[in-house]
Length: 106
Image 1 (cartoon, rainbow, N blue to C red):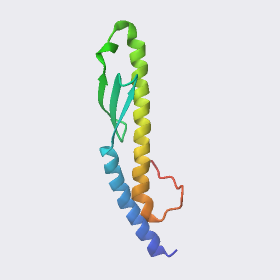
Image 2 (image 1 turned 45 degrees about the vertical axis):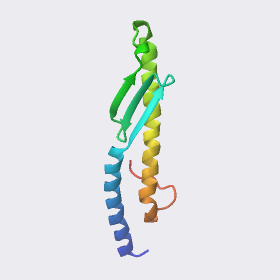
Image 3 (image 1 turned 180 degrees about the vertical axis):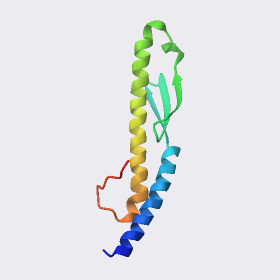
Image 4 (image 1 turned 90 degrees about the horizontal axis):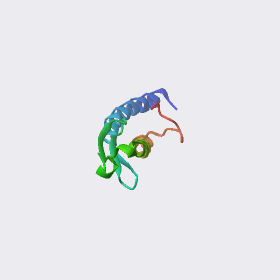
């Protein structure tokens, strides 16, 4: 592989990475638990964008259940965000000729 080709690929990768970072922020995923009693939305960076709690869970003796449902909904949403980021990364970086399975720094 010649040096100029490597430099061109590096420049292209840098451009794609900037684009990818912008697109990650725009990703929005939803996680839910308790059959939809708790639903939350995260962006691709993991920032909480919204939380909905069914009023039936707002009882003093069910605080622990509510806390567990929020954690479970967050876990689901985070997994969906990571999957969406991975798909976006593969889509944007697929044309660069990188070795199969190469992990990027995020």
